[in-house]
Amino acid sequence: MTPGAYILIGILGVLVLLLWQMRRGLKMGAMLLRINSPGTLDDHYLLCATTVDELFYGIFITDAAGKIVLVNRQGEKMSGYTRRELMDQQIEMLLPEDRRERHVQQRNDYSVDGGTRPMGSGLDTQMRRKNGAHIPVDIALNTFTVPGANGGTRHVATVRRRPAN
Image 1 (tube, helix red, strand yellow):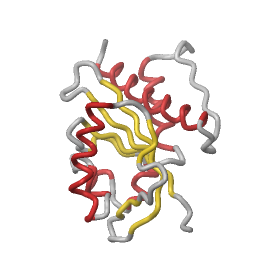
Image 2 (cartoon, one colour):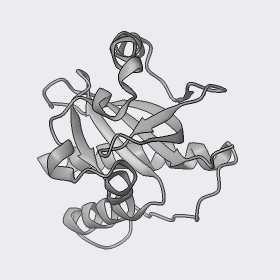
Image 3 (cartoon, helix red, strand yellow):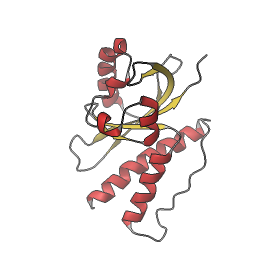
């Protein structure tokens, strides 16, 4: 397969996660993607990339070591950082400072267990914005493997801003 095919597979992993969230009752507009529809791989990649970029949810994809490798537009908006500022940074930069050290161990444990699940279910999960403010968020996690990629495991955090109580 071409490198573009691997990227497409990774983005499809994000779409699968979003469909899982729909099944769990989170509100989201319906998406339809027909992989066998006419068009080139580049057309499908563009469709998937555009879909992920335009989602209502913030998407943060990290490698196995927790380094951010992809952020969508909503992720930028929620965090206050640009993609350029987020790329190659540790995901812990988006956590309140008092939770960062513990999160590294939790992330390492999740790398072993993997799967799809909500993060901090029932807990007060928060994102630390660039300006230092904390916002309440709901986070769902998913793990997938990108064949042939360095550190092939990727973690997807789908983040939705939660109304303050």
